[in-house]
Length: 502
Image 1: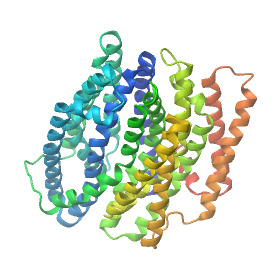
Image 2 (image 1 turned 60 degrees about the vertical axis):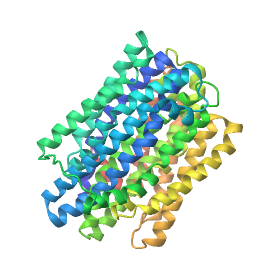
Image 3 (image 1 turned 45 degrees about the horizontal axis):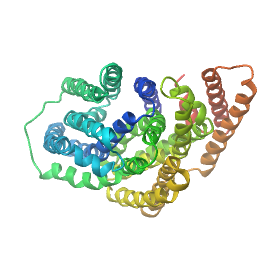
Image 4 (image 1 turned 180 degrees about the vertical axis):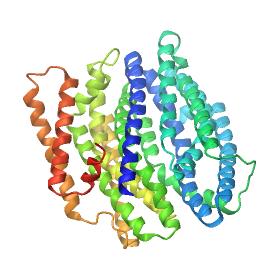
C-alpha cells in the first residue's frame, strides 16, 4: 500500500509541479508588466477577499463530504452515494449563486470595509476585480465536490491537469491587459475556471456520475451541513490570516500587499506540490479506514503521513529561509519588478517560509481530525490562533512593517499546530503522531546539516559561477543528495520509499 501511494504521489507531484510552473509563469508575467504597483495590490486584495468568503466554504463542504460519502457508500451502497453527491452540489449551487450576486452588487462596500486603506483608482479597480472574480464561484462549487468524488475512486490526475487552464487563461489575460486595459486582468480567472469545470464534469460523467435533481436538508445531506460549519471556521485560519495581513498592509506604502502576495505564492507552491499531494492521497484512505473501523490501517497512515510531511517540509522551510533573497531575485526580478521590489518581497518570503513546517503539519493534523468526524476541535483552535495572529500583527507591524505581518502568520500557524498536537495526545491516546522521537530527531538533524552544507557549496562556487539560477540548481541538487544519504544512514525507512521513485 505504501509503495503504491508513494508512486501515485510522485506522478501527482510532477504534474502539480507543472501546474504550479504555469502558475508561476502567470505571476512572472504579472510581475514583469505590473511589478509591485497598485494594480497588483488591487488584484491581490480582491482574490484574498474571495478566498476568505468562499474558499473556506468550498474547502469545508468538501472535507465534510468525503467522510460522509465513505460512510454512505459502505453502509448503503453506491447509488446512495450518488444521490448524496447530487444533493450537496445542488445545495452549493444555491449558496454560491447567492454569494455571487451579493459580491457583484456590493463590491464597492466590500472593498471599503476590507481594504479601507484603498482610495481613488486603487479602490475602483479592486471593486471591479471583485465583481469579475465573484462570477466564477458557481463553477468552482461544482468542481469542489466532484474532485473528492473522483479521489475516492482513485482518480487524481485529471483534477491536476485541469488546473492548467486557470494559469494559462490568466497569463493570456494579463498580457492582453498590459497592451489594452488592466481592467481585463480578472477575466482570465473566470475563463480558466469555466474550462476547468467542463473538464472535471466530463471526467466524472465518464466515471459513472449522473446528476440528480435531488434536494434535501435531511439525512446525510444535513450531516454535511452540520459538519461543514465547524470545518469552515477551522479551515479558514490561513485565509483569515492572509486577509488580516492584506487589510493592515493596505495602510502601508504602495506595494506592500503585492510583496506579501508574491512571497506567499512561492510558499504556497511548495505546500501544494508536496504536502497537499500527500494529504490528498492519504485523506480518502483515512476516511475509509475510519468508516470500516480499521484502527491498524488508520494509525499506520497517520504515522506514514506525519513522517513524510516532516521529511519534506523541514528542508524546504530551512532552504527557503536561507536563500530567500536569491529565490525572489531568480523568480521575479525583471521588467517592472526591480531590486527594490525584490528587497520588499524577500523579507516577507523569509518570514512566511518560517511557517512552512507549521502550515504543512497543521493541514495534515486537521485532515486526521476530519477523518474521525471531529470538526469542532480544529475550529476552536483555529479561532484561537486567529486571535493570536491579530495580537501579533498589531505588535509587529509598527517595528517590522509588512515583514511583521508575515512573521505573525507563521507564529500563529505554529501555535495552532501545538494546540492540535497537545489535544490529540490527550484525547486520542491510541493515535501516535510520531512513533519514534529518534526518527524525528534524525529528520531534523539531516535537513539542517544538508542545508548548511549547501550554503558552504554556494559560497565556494560563487566566484566561478555567475548565473544565480545555475548556482541555485547546483545547491538544491547537492542538498537533496546529502539529505537522502543522511536519511539512509540514519535508517529512516521512508527514505527507501522515496528511492523507489527513481
